[in-house]
Length: 337
Image 1 (tube, helix red, strand yellow):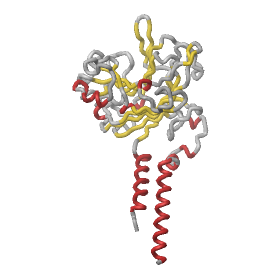
Image 2 (image 1 turned 90 degrees about the vertical axis):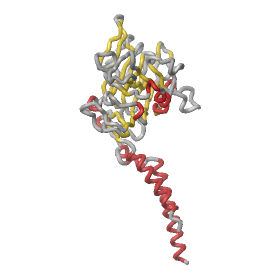
Image 3 (image 1 turned 60 degrees about the horizontal axis):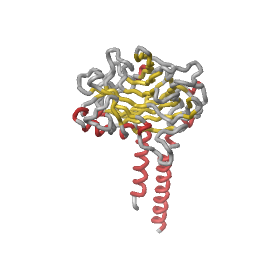
Image 4 (image 1 turned 180 degrees about the vertical axis):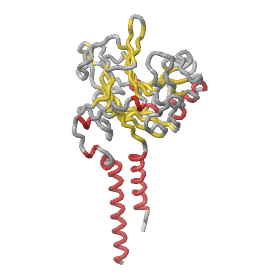
């Protein structure tokens, strides 16, 4: 009897189970434990006297919107970004038009001191709603992922010697060649920032003449090989968190969602007290809109049932069933003789 007939599907099923169940620790983030998980939000307005920062904003919120299905198998809910520069956002009835907005940011301060070379995954998912200005439909965009980095190794933020690296979805190659732009309206898209292209806020023409590079290329440059995420101290504009999701005033009247931020690092998080699950490893932040208080969430969306609806898991079970039946037929035939 060829036992490999059974072993191969069994191994395949084991690998799928490991991928689905044990690959990452999910940290649920809602309005009640937002700060405890290291998250903060703010906005910057451009005034005649200069930029004015606020470490609070009504333009970023964790929401429950049944009309926007979150990426499978996440809980319903996501972070909503709105930048009403010239037109009202009907999703935010209490917010007025503000043409002075320079940018809004969702930040995390729990990764201060983590070296870029020790990060092995950076992903996040976005969903962009159509927006207009003066009746003209605007091109789609998505929140920028920025990492504030300590370049000179002095463990403090210095805007002269340090920098920000930025992953901009609109500047990435198209995920689907049948679609005209990298970012598209009314669909969830996952951005693999770790493998994508980045730029520096303060260009370094000597190292990167076109200000366009991958993280591998950045870390290969001697100047940046020991760069690490650093929080802001000393009252600088843009708050403290060294990991930032930003929507700038270049994205006029932006409306969109963000969810499933994934980061992998083997290091202990330095911030004290550390947020839940901050011992390193593969983490995913799932923004929970507490929708169960608003809509009836079906039982099959709650763990562990999403596993059993995973196509790869179903394929593994079918393969095992076929292998088992094949073994049964062969064994029966052998004894029949």
